[in-house]
Amino acid sequence: MPVLEFQLLKTHVPWPRGVTSNFCMKINSAIVIDFEKFLKEGKFDCLKLGQSKEWVLGNFPNPDGFDKYPNMIHDDIWRYGVIELHFNKNELFLIFSDYVDELNGGDSLILEKHILSNTKEFRLSDIMSKLNNNHIDFQKNTTYFGEAMVKLELKSQVCLSFRLEELEAEEYEKYIKRSKVVSQNEFRLSSFSLM
Image (tube, rainbow, N blue to C red):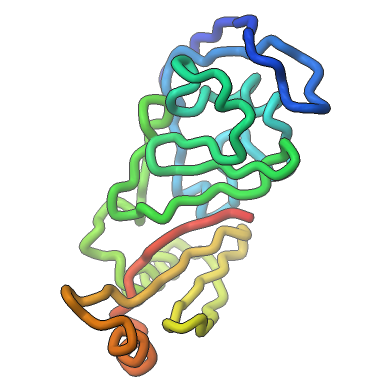
């Protein structure tokens, strides 16, 4: 496990309303995110939903681009590679990515992807089998918002979403119809979220 280095920095950016500090702790080394723990327990290192932006900056690496653009503290979405932290009224309410085929944590996060390592095995049937093999309980639900979408809601509160891949030059109406008749086993992982 890498040794974490910290540095206390004074920010020159006014904090959002309700945030009282203008100091943040910079973590100088990347941290490891264990996706097996994330899927089983909903743990994304030390982050928990409801934590403030101030707390996240003091205890988690800075988002991509923060050193160059410190005003991004006011943004509602912070990015770490293709993983996003979403804030509402300065509180973390969502950890999300819809770029699972390109999953990376930027410079700040080292990802131990486990069952999300092999993008060739992102079909619904593959992921369900892997979840079962790892004793990760889930509930499967199908929703229809135009297209059919399958969601696996894990016991950990993590949600895995699956959709049918669009064919090249396929008309949207044909895609919608196809998504409702093709075996859902052919749907591919399209996003994950903890909300």
